[in-house]
Length: 129
Figure 1 (tube, rainbow, N blue to C red):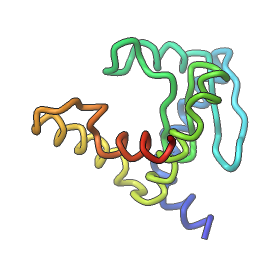
Figure 2 (tube, one colour):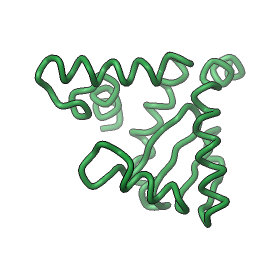
Figure 3 (cartoon, rainbow, N blue to C red):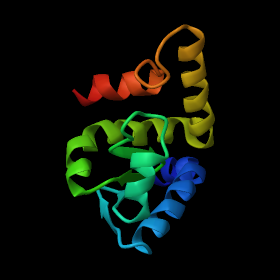
């Protein structure tokens, strides 16, 4: 069954692998931890800090079976949270990214915060703690 989960999530993972390539070609590092590619540093560090909608940026971000982080410490601190997102990607497959954006839009439409009140983030914070 693992193969099916990897295949179902592959379109999102492919996006993540593009950023892994960017990371390692700009001085970052990558490794596989429990079936998930973890990349850190390089241009990915800058993108997470400056190209997200979160004030101050993000420490980590999951795209399928890829987790991008600013550094190794961020991977350690966010691993359980990001693994919940990996599981979400396995459930939602190629619909994960559109569903995540839609959940943010729903939160905003309800007068809530686009990130903290996003259904996917609420689940990840709940399960990671």
